[in-house]
Image 1: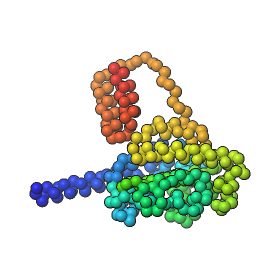
Image 2: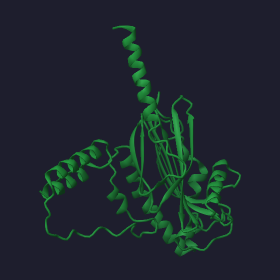
Image 3: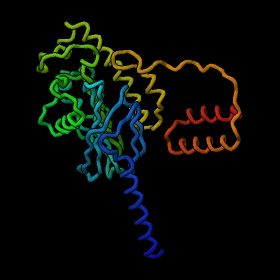
Image 4: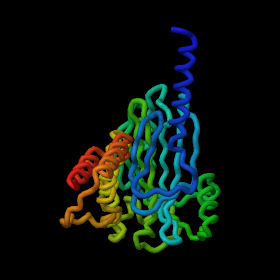
Length: 314
């Protein structure tokens, strides 16, 4: 084969790489509800978001120790004019040159002592890791670079940042397998679940940590619900990240951290008079539906259901 052929092939893959790496570099201020889509060379994924509108306020890219491009997304949720949650998502943009090494975060003594839930495998430098932890966390230091960007963003919206929550329920899910990796963190303030704003506690004095929680029945009830929520929420995260098979309905029907439903489960459809759609319009709808399915924006189950509904309208 000619040298020109190899050069053309190289240029093609460079263009393809550039296109995909930039595919989901969302701009600051973009909002998301229920689902967060990722589409890079390393793969397509869909991650669940807790109820509410989440706004991207910060992104960061860097190279790992093995030279793989990593991207981090930081999202914030506002309820009224109150800061009511934060999510951080880190994942590779490219296919890794080597398998990921475990961080061993769930092996750390502090995490073992203060987590209300710790379910993990993977010690430092193992070839795989799956660490799920949930527990109370003290508020961020205002001088931290990401916190500063968050405060700057909130200030730009005229949000008062003087009374930010001083404590959080934090869910951490670290996943590493073969050439893929995910760092998924959700921070939700107890104040969002009808608890009064508290003083700044140390970890040993906080009423939310395992050694103290039994003395606070109302707090214990929320923690027990949060532990159950984290275990089932992890399944949604894995289904979207590993299999890319997460549907919107699964997220909508998932209970919130306090046990209540995100939305009411849709009622059964009430039959109505059938209206026959024009043939041309029906063909157009089927083509659009097929494009959504091919682009993996809807699941196979959703595709079949909608296709059936279109054909039944004939």
